[in-house]
Image (cartoon, rainbow, N blue to C red; front, side, top):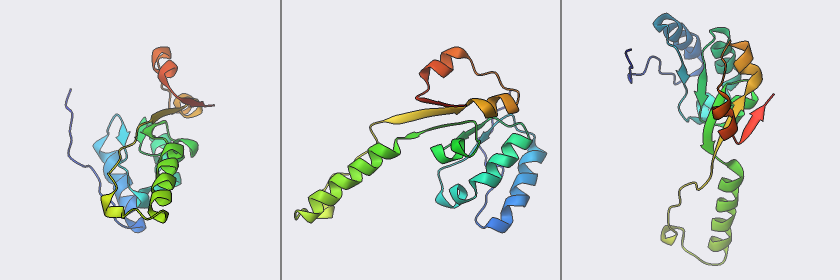
Length: 138
């Protein structure tokens, strides 16, 4: 088995998506990994539609992809991120200097799996994996 870490397709503008999809399909991968990028998030519907049409199991960086029909995501909890941001805003409003506040990393990651998509692409997800999921979308 050959594993490649080289990017197959890079997209910077919406009009480049079709070329990226063609390049990915031509490479005939067995899975799709989408990096965390807000530009790509804005085009998640097209990306997810492509992945499902090509029967590619996809790992996505945000739960919104899974809600749009992507297979799975493993990402920081948005609720926890927002709570942490609110805590920082509170400290700043009380006089703390933003530069003096420590950088914090997410403390809670969520695994979300879309069972409908799993069925649509013909993938059987092991029960042991599903038991580890924080949320299953049916």
